Length: 240
Ligand SMILES: N[C@@H](CCC(=O)N[C@@H](CS)C(=O)NCC(=O)O)C(=O)O
Image (cartoon, rainbow, N blue to C red; front, side, top):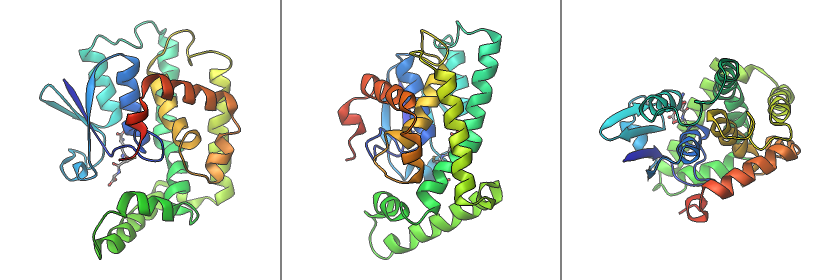
């Protein structure tokens, strides 16, 4: 049995991390059973200091990219077997674009902008006892802001960051077109990836410039809503 170590449901999604949601969506699309183990404290024992990681019958694998490559190897590549080499190449590059670039536009909307930060702070740290409730979010936000600046996204204005997000969303919407799945009639790894990232800005119960922009892409919005309701139960997406 596979255990997926996660943060836990929040804001109407099974997980507020696109990386955790990517692995969960991949397992659901591949029809491989798994159990969730949701706890913020998993970060302390995470092999790479980040979530997700999995335990696959005693084998620990960390990082969504390595987890999916592990699952592809061990479960006979159930989602991408039918893809052409060109489709695999596109899938690989789009995943990297979302992991390494679009992700930071989500960080900007949640952790950097002052409008959404109080909601994030309350959701992630509100249950901590005083004075940790004051100190930990302040430190976490400072660490995130430093990483955001060092990564490079933090050098752009708010408008430029939205422009970058808009370009990605427009490209994804064009890639999807009127198809049911990104590569045609069957789901593949790229569907898990696109769902995981786009749901974080369309289905998420947060209202900010990025979510308002993303919801204008109604094909992407409906695609995410369809996958979310077909593959995740209401119990899984309800914050405990
Ligand atoms: N490359 C990693 C990224 C994972 C990642 O950044 N996870 C974030 C949540 S979205 C995390 O665990 N952050 C906690 C921290 O950095 O302390 C993957 O693909 O799994």
